[in-house]
Length: 96
Image (cartoon, rainbow, N blue to C red; front, side, top):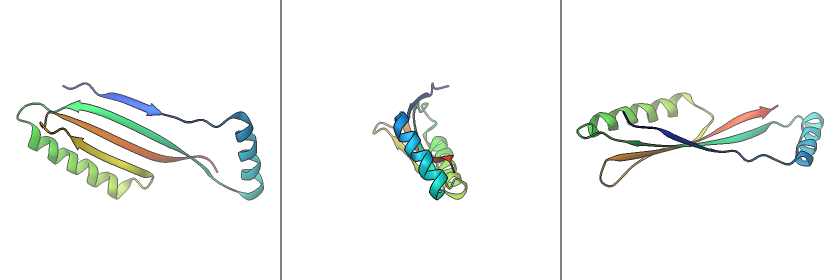
């Protein structure tokens, strides 16, 4: 079984920005969203490429149908078909 590596990038506003944002939310009713980015790399076992591609197609189809907050959901297979990188970006409401 391949090892999955996850990498996340979270950009946080300064304290002063949070105060300004909180004031806007309370005054005008804005919603604030955070972007969550994930990246995973995995190895594709020899002889398993077609099964892997079928499973990936099902995952991609499910995300397109069900996940409305998904901004990016990309699968990249290496030129030698032995590795895959998945990049996902989600928009998550943090304050409404």
